[in-house]
Amino acid sequence: MLVTRTGTVVLVGSREDAHVQEMARRLSAEDVDSVVVDTLAFPEETRLSLTEDLAGIVVDGRDVGRPAAVYLRGLHAHPLAYLVDAQDAMDADWRTTLTAFREKSALLNGLLGRWERLGVPLYNPPSSDWVMHKPAQLAALQAAGLPVPRTLWTNDAEAVRRFARGGRVAYKPVMGGAATRELRAEDLTDERLAALSAAPVTFQELLPGEDLRVYVLDGAVIASLRIVTASLDFRQNEERIELVTLPEDVARACVKACEVLGLRWTGLDLKRDADGVPRFLELNGSAMFLGFDARGGSDVAGHLTRALVRHARGE
Image 1 (cartoon, helix red, strand yellow):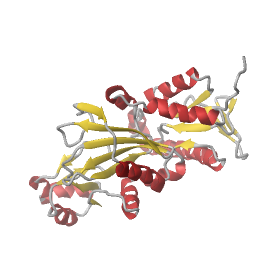
Image 2 (tube, helix red, strand yellow):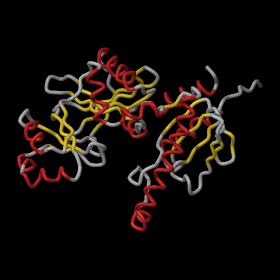
Image 3 (cartoon, helix red, strand yellow):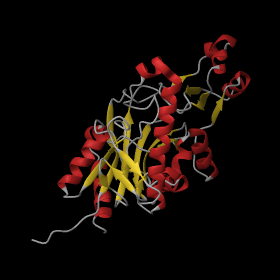
Image 4 (cartoon, helix red, strand yellow):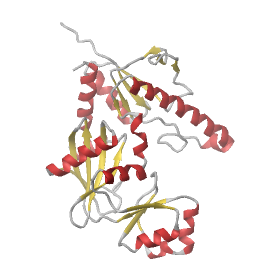
């Protein structure tokens, strides 16, 4: 029997992450070799060495060099990152702990930067990191003529009051980590707005329409789903998730959004305004998809696997 030789696919993330586990399982089923760079276990357990040679990359004693493709799930390079538990270390010595995380981040980002320099297909490349910050992301989409909500990022109380005069407003963290809430009259008091001196906040026109999650991979929409919820923030409040077919103009806009931001793949969150126009809320650099596949009947995992397999086989 003829055996097709494949290249190696690298999965960057934690072995504890269900998405990394599922991609490793699916690649194995396709007889494609994969290597996990366990970034949650780095540097305590995962061994990573880089030399001055661009392709001089060794992971846990294995020469990885130039892989066929890379799926980036997460770097776990911050005390607040998903799955990271740094509470004891931060309590004991926060300065040394933050310094260690900075060093970890520098090496892992350098690793990804090398692979991008070598022309390795990365899902997603580090050159797109700047647009993962929402103030840059939505501005880039707006400049490209794509519909986004009226939004204000600020720590200025008077700017919030002026913005709130434009209609119903939602507010949420700039980076994430808390649920979206509607801005109420009691939130506009001096005492309440004084909290802005601790951290800036995102204020955004409240969109009343349906929530959509759209997945784009290598320039094509691979899944689009409607999320039925009675809550302002659908996360953990989904009543139903249903497959839908996007109008062609909306599908083209989703693909264009990826191109504008330099993403090979993403999960996009859109919400319809009062006129029914879907507006872009966010493009995720490493979107979760297993839950949507399970509840909505999509096959994002299959599409992503097939893309990685094609690279591994040189197709």
